[in-house]
Image (cartoon, rainbow, N blue to C red; front, side, top):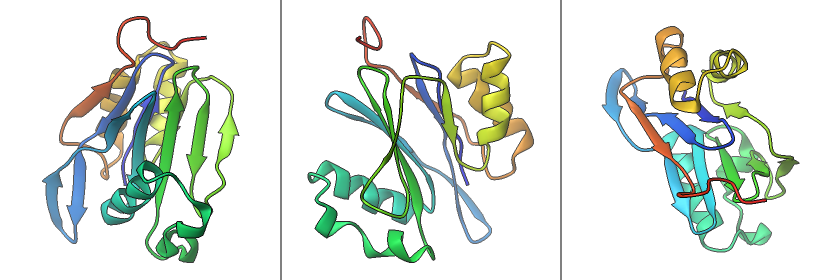
Length: 150
């Protein structure tokens, strides 16, 4: 449960984490040198797959729980050139050219909002209005001055 949205300049995410029926606040987007990253799904799985990527993304060390599908997270990596890598059940990402993008349970709401001209942070706010798995505020990251570099 989450929403992570990329509009070509900003990577935005809601901050909601749920543990059983308990709602908490967390961070789901991160700077990774020349890339931005965000995860959706189970937070413990998200932290594990993020740590795997930070440690060099060795396919032999890919988290076992990601492959099982019982407790997994989607990891979105946005590179400075705007290209997008999406990891789920294998250490081999699906690669997408630069485009608006969203993942998580609030994905469809965020994509519709961006299609209608909203920014990624605004799209996350829209998703939070309609998806009960999203909420607790919005975090936003950019590449800094100049945004995406061709």
